[in-house]
Image (cartoon, rainbow, N blue to C red; front, side, top):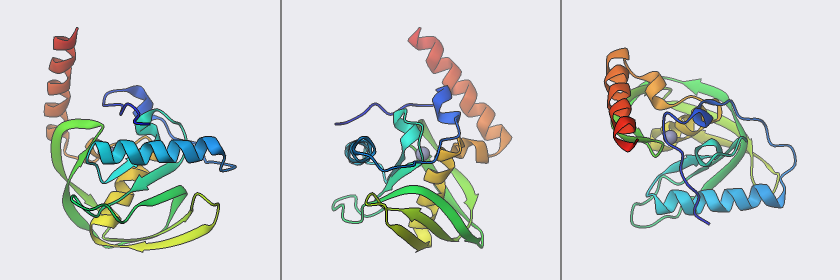
Length: 168
Ligand code: ZN
């Protein structure tokens, strides 16, 4: 089932999410819905808080856009290693109409669980590394606009205020 993607400045995007204890059917259903929602929105990653769920679950697939064959679902991901520095342009399904350069680690190592509860260790660089860092940020209530320059952030905030006024 496709779920609604929350957009900034929804407060639920700023909450620090809780670890998942047992991987229940409900969690598996949430993961399946997140995958469907991500593909439907042509995204490469989605974190649980973006669909209003307060738990540490992310889905990513940086393949495509034509074929989608690198789906990864991670429960309670945490960084084991962050190395180097790289600046790339990012966007976010929860932050409409903005792309901006963000500086992040170049290479990462993650520990997480898969949906079967197995421990997994992931080494990533390139787009996958960036995408995983972006999604894990969501679990801590951080959006990529929290990492851009103050000037760009203010311009974006003003734009969002105008949109919200128009909606009323
Ligand atoms: Zn995002």
